[in-house]
Figure 1 (tube, rainbow, N blue to C red):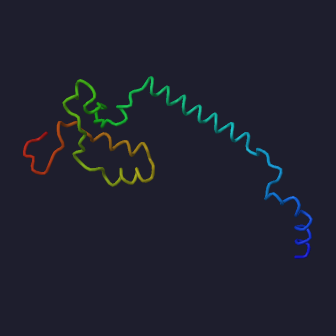
Figure 2: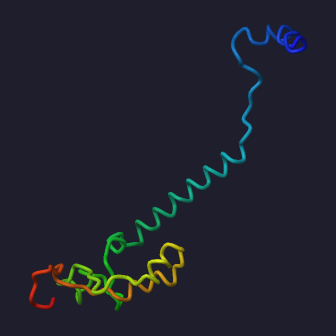
Figure 3: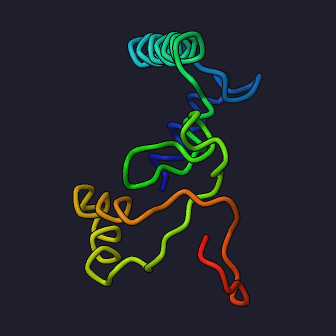
Length: 124
């Protein structure tokens, strides 16, 4: 304890303006990598905005790979309906992040004009 007090007393003048020491940038490389990553994200976003179609991200896709309500063939059928719920096997694949098995769920969808209800007597 005495040694600590001696060192503290010796360095007392160094802290008269607060704990300001000799500081320098220690993560220059990480800062450069971070800025390059941000520029890359901006470039990718710009490319996607100019060449892509963001509407496709929000569409429901049926088993024939038609976007519901997007193409001329399906413009009158804007909703995606799954006639049968996903099986337990597919649910487990989604939880296990098994993408190939999880994509099987997409093979059951059908584009419909309106969402079915329990009291609908006619097929859609």
